[in-house]
Amino acid sequence: MTTIRRAFDADADGIRRVARAAWHDAYDSLESEVIDETIADWYADPLGSALHGWAGGVPANDLDDIEAVLLVAEQDGDIVGFTQGITMHTMGTMLRLYVHPDHHGEGVGTALYDRLESTFRDHGVEQFRALDLASNDRSREFFENLGFERVETRTLTIGGDPYDEAVYARELPPADE
Image (cartoon, rainbow, N blue to C red; front, side, top):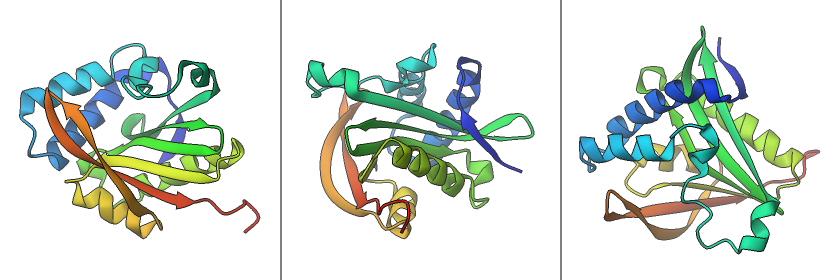
């Protein structure tokens, strides 16, 4: 049985393990050492640093309006997936959603997404965005099945090299619909 809960600093090793396995599985265009360095950088202790790099371009006076959410999926005491999102005003952005490849097809990603969407609704989110490397066909299919549309492509630098990042979006209907 999968349990979805808020992450704690003690979950950092499990989160890094899932992120590393998911990246190696999904992003074969990246060199192994680039993946390992990026995971170590993005998911350094404490876990609050997992928002690394996102705030670029957000006006400093808006940073106080950002609420961060980091959720983990746990099975038998092991972290098998996680999602990370932020809300700002009526916009919610899923920065990451990773499931360990050994647990693909078990509904872990959907359970994480559902809990994040519920959390976003509680924060008054009306517009839901999701980000991932444009080369990740599995995530594209996942988001499209949830009703997202690709609305933008932007550039993300990983290991000093530029990569296309897809931005998906969908409106969240009111909770009573």
